[in-house]
Length: 255
Ligand SMILES: [Zn+2]
Image (cartoon, rainbow, N blue to C red; front, side, top):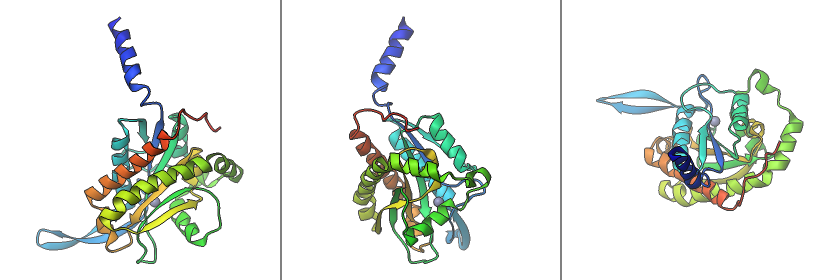
């Protein structure tokens, strides 16, 4: 009896908040480093070279996003430590946990070393050359089965998710702009459409954040700061909450 009351109590007080499921996806992992930047740091009296990997920054930021969202929704990470995860595995996880949203976390890099700032992507096809470049970076790790991307499926996913994803991107980006941009004096590069396979395969409304340029000699130092990561993570979480506030109930599965 006591057990039943307890279960009822838990359901009553946790179920409404736990209705939505968010899958947070730290980009890359394992042998796939993503972007890499060598910095010089002081160790005692010596200055030594240190390599900063996108996969590590992405994991730190993703874990913080999860912590901020945990009290409100059921949240999962596609990886919680440094390991390689294929695109298909990430997508299968979205199905397994019945995710309502998919949030992929990345940091940018460019051959033009003066590029800097943050941008938020949602899945859409388009023909913009500048955006195509970013896609090449984030899609370059496609391997084996991952390479067989069904373009008919992608078109269908875009058709069914684009308005929700665009709305989510708007809410998240607005929060980042209001919080991170001012404090860290970063350039707002805007909300952009992009053909990221990880978003397409997840078959969910979702976004991919590029939280600053590792290749920029000044910006890299901001991205390594704990207060930067905390603020960015909190902004993503607040944006997700803003998005869910506009929904009165869960969507039916898209597929
Ligand atoms: Zn990346």
